[in-house]
Structure formats: structure tokens, C-alpha cells
Length: 383
Image 1 (cartoon, rainbow, N blue to C red):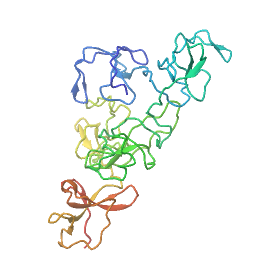
Image 2: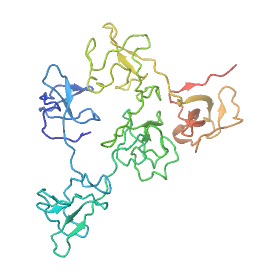
Image 3: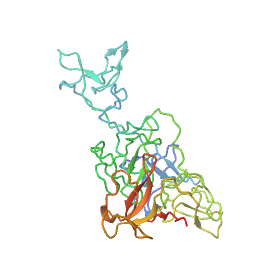
């Protein structure tokens, strides 16, 4: 994403000049930088960008090359462009200039390890030791920071926030969400992974006690062409920041204003939501869910009627406030005559004294003890 980029490129991918950042507000934050260099203040997944001086083009991405990595994308390392110049046993490499390999004269004016003949063992070099003509280099494999397919089960990168920006819970921890991956993923910190082959790719449990888990945005590797992640057409909690569907009318029937437009309502989300057309979203974590600016000059914005996903938690009407672990029905004050607890539940952590149901990762509804302050719906009692 180029969040750490602090270079001086100041033109966009189409050659337009960048505008100074000073005094511009992005996501309610006033920019103070006194320069016009490409940056990524809103963590755009496509990297650094800038506002342009062209009145017809509000903003555009910049073309910033990726830094060379001292690691291999795969065992052959054909794409390696790093600067390791010693072999695995410590011999200095010889310059490639003028050497013929497979009838092809090498012209590179350096002595860095490379793999010009696609040796299956990876990069190597000719050595300056007269007794050793050539030798392989010891270059580690990179953490896989992209995925080769939708599942991304082999992803080993360091993305640690979800699609909606929530921080991932450490896999070795069981608070705020208990789970069965503490041993399997104990050394994976809080990085997004896909240990159970979730169909839409890597995910994580979140540190938000109201949102158990969410998918993560992990880029596809170069050269991989695959359909984008399907829209998430429902919300997983009340705020619904995960929602990426195509509802474009408010709950009262008003048409939504395109996010890239500033008419009739000016707003700070033109860059952040430029690709979201006029679909309902929740970029500022509104309490009651996705919303949009409307095309009606008399109504600035309204909430949208976005349905909940199937795994919303609901209260069942029981609690263990008198004795920990001993639940009674609220209405009758009688003890439970049956149970259907989820894995490792009830755990009684942090005042989890109320009974809820939840669609667990086995695809079935089970019981869970939760903090009574959560904003869940209730199951209605049949009379």
C-alpha cells in the first residue's frame, strides 16, 4: 500500500501534476504537509496518490515502483532483484558483465546473485575464487504477501486488519472470542489466515467483542487473474461496515448520491469511496449501519435498509447473574432443561452472563454466553 513511502514523486500515472496537500481534509483529518508528493493518507489498497492540478481530474494514483526485497518469491527466484553478492559458503560473487550463459552474453554491471538459466535451486553466481567456478546463494523465501487463488490458504503475509478496518485478535488468545486455532496458529500473531478453507479467503477474529470475525483484503499475486471477491450483500453486525452490496436507496426510498460526486452534498469521502458508485456504505462507523448522501438537496443523508447476515447473534432470554455458570430462564426463573453450547462454551469470561445463539464455523447454531451489554436482537417467545 505504500504507507511508508516518503519519496518525491509528484506526478500521477497519467503525468498530471500533483496539488499541495496543505489545508486539504481527508476523512475529517486536516493535512498539513507543505509539499505535493504522492502519499497514501487513507491507506488505499492501490498505493500512493494525490489530488491533481487538472480541474477535470480530481485525484489519481501515482506510479511508485516496489522496493527490491532480499528474499525469493519462489525457490527458483527468477524475479529476485536484490543485492546479495556472496555465495552460501561466503565466497564473493564475480561481475556478470561479458560472461556467456547458454550462448547469451550477460551485460549486467553488477555481481549480485541471479538465476539467468532458471536453475531449480535458485539464484547463484560465478565466484572470485579460482578454485570454485560458481555456487548457489543463500537467500530466504519471502513471506507470501499475496494469494494465488481466492482461498489464499498459503498466504503468510502480515495483513492484520479486516475488510472494515477492525484489528485482528491474536491467534494465541481467546479473548474477546474463544476459538479452536490457538495451537495450530499460535505463532501467527494476529495476521489474517485461512485455516479452515473459508471460501472468500483469509480472515481473522477481531478485537471488537461485538464482531466475532471478518474477512481480510489480501491482494492477488502478480499475473493472477481471478474474479474479485463477491459482494457481501448483508451486514454481519449493526454497523455493517463489511457490507459491499449494491443497495442504492435509503430506507425511505431516497436515491443515493454517488460518493465521487459533491453535488448536492459536499463530503470528505470522495477519495475513500470513489469506486463504490452510489451504494450504501458506512465509512465513518455510524452506529445504526450503512447509509448514503441523498440526491435530494433537502435531505443530506439517510440510513439504508441493509439486511443482516445469517450469523447475527440473538438473545435467548436466560442468564447466570446469581451463580456463575448456572443459567436460568428470565421469565420463569427455572433452570435450563437442555443445552446446546458451542465449542468451549460457556466460558464465563468478563461478565459474560447472558445467553445468546450464534452460527458457528461448523455451519450450525449453538449457544454462547455473552456480555449482557451487547446490542443484540431477541428471540420472541411463542405464546
